[in-house]
Length: 330
Ligand SMILES: *Cc1c(COP(=O)(O)O)cnc(C)c1O
Image (cartoon, rainbow, N blue to C red):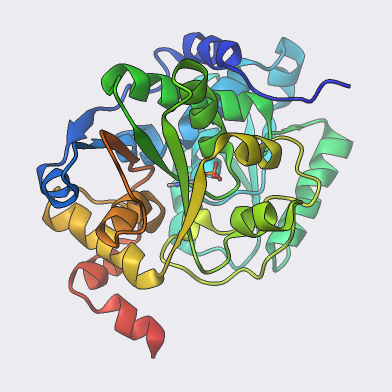
């Protein structure tokens, strides 16, 4: 049996499929970080992507790859975060139905953001598990197509298009730091980069509070970890005990995985704002946080992916004022 994986050719095909549907985001030099580490540091400004995160790449590719019959049935997911937003946006562009299932506990502002993108919302139960049960029911009974946030070949290939852009924008990249949760982004970016430039180091960065991929890599198989509140909320959640693709790809393609404390993530958000004039969410700030904390040794041109900007602005204000961490510790 050949192992399922995503390769350069799939990522190139994804790029053609999603051309015109996503932005090619800028990659700029950070002078303050370059001075600090003594090597050029480039920021891939993917938080400026439409919908505020890279997730639109995978969602657009997966939707574009559906058959006409699947398109007529519509897509469904349980994500209320960046994947849900991306799916709603991409489905709307295709004139398709998107259904996002969520529990009663999801805050009103998140609900509104997804509703504004034109998705149908179904509120069900009191937990993410209840919402997922409803997704399974809609797939079985109404024929909707489920598109998961990371463990799907077309999602991974779409996220990998970010790697193709990095190769063109920083051809001499020696290290690329990638925010890591379920591993769709890291697997796609690493597959693109390693195919062309096997010696480029690709390093995953997660938060110490509930890093499911890191725990799984250490255990040698997908494992569950306790979900904890974190400033990098887009990096929360498990990798799935029946993970098909991203676990194996991260195991074979990533050179290292580094974990950050909440203080280190907050320092990344603060630096992005004060020194780079960029508003990023916690997950998007982990590369900066890792460099500032000296958690990653770099030895040449380094690229940090700023992956998203969908942070509550009240929380952002408290972080840049230095209040949020004290608040959490209390
Ligand atoms: C989803 C997400 C990630 C992590 O991506 P995975 O493919 O799950 O590893 C990182 N940053 C942001 C902003 C995200 O929305």
